Image (cartoon, rainbow, N blue to C red):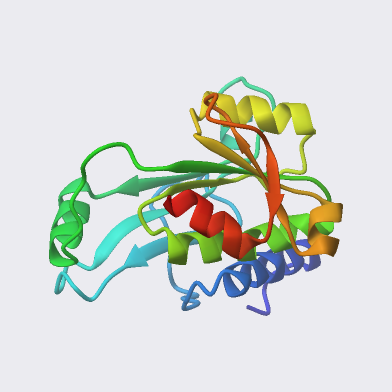
Length: 196
């Protein structure tokens, strides 16, 4: 990794810190490459040992310059290819069945302290509510912009985390489909709220 310039090294360290914060195990493979030349920074593969020799489920990477090369404005982006057949086999191997639309929660994050905390909260929610769809907006966009994204995602609830909530060790829950009023509570109480 000695060949990385200072900016790339800093970016990679931040990326690894996010993975560690979420308890996502990873292995650095300095020989991993993707077959297209528009990738920059990190490329990745998601693998499993549950499917034998065909263990790659998903592969992709970051490509900040692609939209601009195609005539658009400069846009940071991440993309991937997913093997649907392999994903179905993996779901079957883990006895996961798909049915009605799962609960969806959009994390609205305000402030840098809340940004890092939101990733820990997303990991806890994922552990407690494994079938829920979680959207974690760490762009530090405005409150209004994040709620527009939550609406576009058709989320059931917004979980709001700002500096005040971080200091008080609480979250605010706002129903987005007319099912009640906004409430502030502990994360443990929020998990029970979502389970009911």
